[in-house]
View 1 (tube, rainbow, N blue to C red):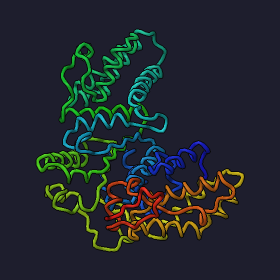
View 2: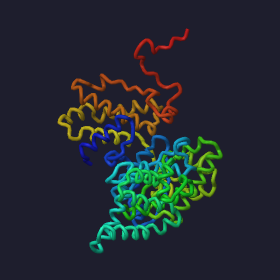
View 3: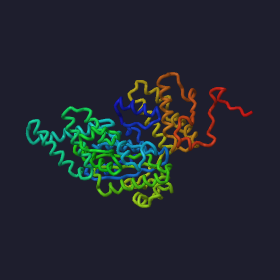
View 4: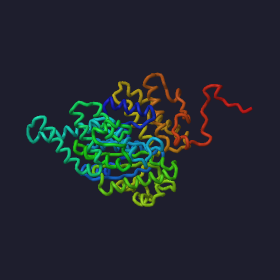
Length: 442
């Protein structure tokens, strides 16, 4: 699959940094074809006004973040807005849904708008209301504002019952925008995004007070979904990534977080959030271990799936799916795709593919995996980063031969904690670069 030059550069730059690209992932997707049919069906259900919950399990290095962003790309093409929230003990604790909602709006994106796209979405919603009024016939400015206000009240009737402050802030934001009061409009938009510390004078304009709390956040999510639908979006994909971090928090905090997750699952199932696709990612230890989901039996029962059979026969429609991770063949396929993407459009692409041929890609994959004790499933990120480094050198230096001039070294300093934990103890020794690195035991 070919992509634009700009997107190609963005993908390669991300791989060079050792991070998952934000877009263009279809060209790198290996082993995800088994999920395409089920994902298409679920996105269709979202477009029809239903809600979907999905749990994605996989070991470290299996590609959970990659899968989430691949799913987000497909969701955007289907007309959904998307957002990704990294769950963490200090920055975004799951039991504080008001914080989760704030992060959700901070990373909100659509096919047209990059994060944070909350304000463009709200503005486009008001524009859609105006268009609906104008479609009934020409009116003067005062009549237009009156009828837009009436239409706003109709659209927010259900939301006003559960989140009256959300509707009040929208009304006041509309008035401030029309009046050209930028400071008040920006303050109210921050309030709609769940930001704390909005000035009392701004909130007084809308007749609201206090900050968003746990229960209010769920009402605000309902309001956001209503605005998205009315502004032409099919729904919203929310990814809660790295939920397994709950295993490392205090037991009381963990129990609160698991109960918050159970509440979200139940609310999705009850139809409270039409147009929402909620996805969580975690390790098998989180789903099956005593310090994870099993601590809350009702939640464990709702998400239980039998994974005793061969992965080949997994059910992609199940509430919980597993990512198979990488083996040697899929790692080589990934390397081949990265090389193909890198050389796309280059005038000297033949030289790069001749020097970095399939045999060298296989040798590099084996060398990198060897630093992890041949645990191939942990190697993809580091392997791809090293491969791009090699391609960069071949691209810039015509005489560079990676077999002669490149030593594959993996330092603990370039690894994540999870990757470092999988390295053999003691890790393989790389040649010292200077005498200062040699530790003499006297």
